Image (cartoon, rainbow, N blue to C red; front, side, top):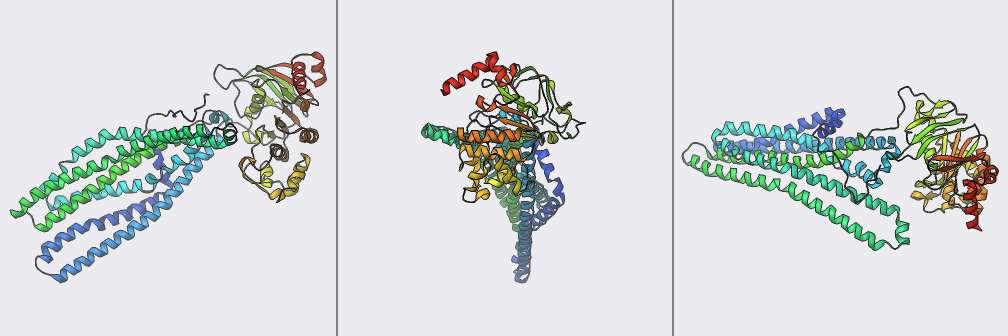
Length: 591
């Protein structure tokens, strides 16, 4: 699968309103809190809406007649209602903020857990930075909709209907006049919605590209400085920042164009009401209190509409983010336990590949009908040119990828018929890319076996000759190391990785280019440790240094996805075939 690079916009399906409905389902476990928030907002809205009516009563009944006592009491009532409204709004904000953060936490956790289940092919096709954006930025984009969106929509609709009822009761004709400009607003929103949605989708794409490049640049900082690429990389960063800024400004411009349009339409309706209302006032059709109350209600009538237009913008932003989130969640986990999968019993180590065919990309075969058998406790070494398929064999044995055809058997059991957990927990792998996590050395070694005691960790380190250099560090096994182990040398990182693998006590051991970056003296030490570790285990060793596999029980030479030679070191040297040529070429360069 071709990798989507940092400068390439991701291709997603068209916007689907179902994404928003699906998003709101995450609020279901908190339905009682949502209901409480709606009740609080309804109370606040009711208290707020009584203001203009009380103003009408105050003007028409108390001010006109000079009743100061009545005016005082109605003023106190108005203040009390405003206080009730403020208290309800405050507790609604607190309630939904807590609920919204819990929902965001649940969504992010679900996305992260799903990502961990995806096969390596998913990560082969996407830069890590773009995956991080989906877990972090895109989930954060849902915050406004989940915390306030639904509650505000319900309360704004309630407020809109309540205002209309009050206004119609106060004066039918003037209310109809205020609503006469409503079709113009609906037409405007309808014409703008697609452009706004596409604008925010583009923002998500450009931010994803930017994040991918930042991640890639930080990861490769050593190469950047070694090849003096700082200026060139800064120019690339500037271009990506410009793309992000332009897309953001375009989306913001489109989104905020709705608000002034609503204000203009609102102003038109108020002007009409002033003109006609003053005429009605001179004719004695309405009182001055009623006209003032209607004008106040018109402002409140348009406020829910303004809020709904703002919410519509939030909804489009959230919809764009939801597309990416659900794109991850809907990515099928293609390596799963079969319906009738059973736990793998203790592995003895008999392994068989039967006519195994595999390809990373369609029609490009990496392994071609590969077949071989391995006896328990046997050490098998794979050699061959880069890209021949050596690491692929290991990836298939551990089910990091699924085979296209054939079968892989361990102790006569097809590995596709057992649970992944029970398979992988009995296979120890030391990768050529030795990843060290931020934390202590003790924590890094225990990563392979969290239940291991301190004594077992130390014993594993001694086995691979890592104990001496660890104890020389300032805090020994509690020494904190940075992400990727930047404080340690390459050889030290590999020794820690080796100890981590040994500590898991696997039945099958895989060393994938495990000594590729270790100096000669360290290699001699680790070779001695390896001989002890391999004892009694079925083991696979992949190495460019042919000196490290001379004692292997069998050496298989892989070329173009096929085994072209097999035998021990002496046999293959005597046959003077491909292995002999590789060995001769390697040591002629050394000499």
